[in-house]
Length: 157
Image (cartoon, rainbow, N blue to C red; front, side, top):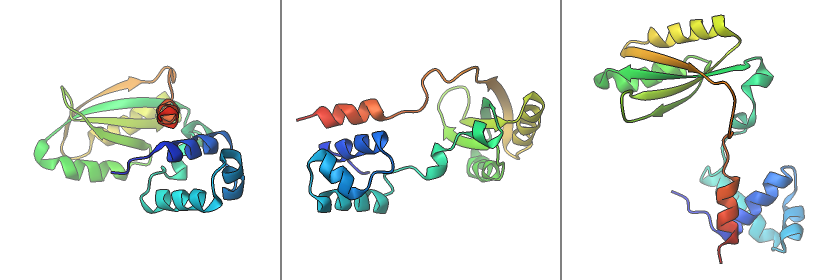
């Protein structure tokens, strides 16, 4: 597990503000050596610190404005097979193993309510899924973020 330090956090915050900045621009902006900036960015790439670019693309912009969450109860002996089957459903954008009444929290997108019904049916048809519950997202109250955490690390002395 990579531990990002204050320098990493300052660089990442600068990239949040100017995603297309060059290494030289970042070094100048932050008062760092160009080699330091380049070494940090190379380490992030090697250790896969940054999420893939597709994570930044909104499904809404791809024609999938409806977002929902499916919780699924799964036969534990078939859990890994279930996850592999879910990978094959394009509208499944995220799968998280959870504790509690269900086993998986599945993020999905759809074109409209009819399409969501179809996607929910595809999920329920996966061998090993015993029961599902679908909840439609009404709005993104706090979209995924890490900036406050980066700011906290950047302010550490």
